[in-house]
Amino acid sequence: MHDAARRYLEERYRELQRAYAKVPRRTGNDYSAAAKRIFPRYRLVEAVLVEVERLDLDHLPERAELLDELRLAAEATPEPTPPGPEADAVAAERALFLDVVERLAVEDGPPSGPRLPYRRVLTEAEQQDWQTWLARRWGVTDLRWHPMIDAPPPADVLVVRETLVRRKEILAFRRAVRDLGVRRVVELREGGPGYLLDVDLVDPVYTGAEGVWTSAGVDWVGYASHEDTLAFGGVITAGLRAWRTSGLAHPSF
Figure 1 (cartoon, one colour):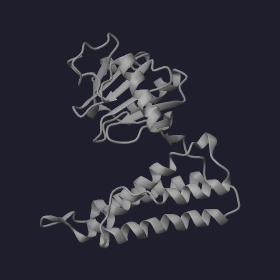
Figure 2 (tube, rainbow, N blue to C red):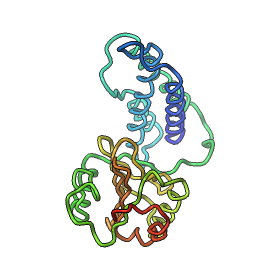
Figure 3 (cartoon, helix red, strand yellow):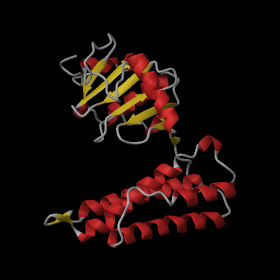
Figure 4 (cartoon, helix red, strand yellow):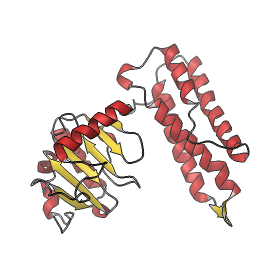
C-alpha cells in the first residue's frame, strides 16, 4: 500500500512537471493561467510525497493505521494559497490522491510490480545529528565542503567537474559505495529534507541545491556545489581512483 501510494505520487509528479514545461510560463508580469493551474499541483504532490516518505519502509504501521497516515499526508500544504484558481487546483489534486488512498483501502491482493527502493525522510533530529558528525569528521559547514570552504583539503580529497559526470560515472560511484559494504546512504540537501536512501537512488549531483552524502561511520563524504564541482573524501576515493586520470578531475586539485 505504501509502495503504491509512493509510486503514484512519483509518476504524478513527473507527469505534472512535463505538463508545466509545455505551457507558457508568464503573461506580462504575471504567471499564465495555465501555469497557475499546474504549478500548485506539482508543489502539492511534492509535499505529500515528503510526508508519505517520512514513514519507514522497514517499520510500517498496520494496515488501518497506514491508511490513516496516508490520508493525513494528503493534508500537506507546501505554501499558503489564497482563494482562487490556484487554491482550486490544489484542492483538486489533493482529492485525486485521496481517491487513490481510498481505492487502496478496498483492494485485496498482492502488490503490483517490484518493491520500490528504500527512501525515508530523516527527522529533524537525525538531520541535525548527521550535520554534527559531518562537521566533526570532515569540516562540513552549513552543508558546504571543499572547494567551497576556506580550509586546507584532506590529502585524499578528489574534486571533479560535475558537468563532465554522466550516467556511467554515477553507476561507478554507486559500485564504489557498494564495495564498501554500504546499503544505504544519507543525503542532505540545502533548503530541503534529508533522506536515507538505497544506494540505487543516490545521484551525487547539483540539482539547484547543494548536496552532501555519507553513510554510517561517516568514513567518506561527497559534496555537490553550485560551482560545477563534485568533491569526495575518505574511503570512497579509492573506488574512484580511475577518475583522477580520466579527464574528470578538476584542474585545481
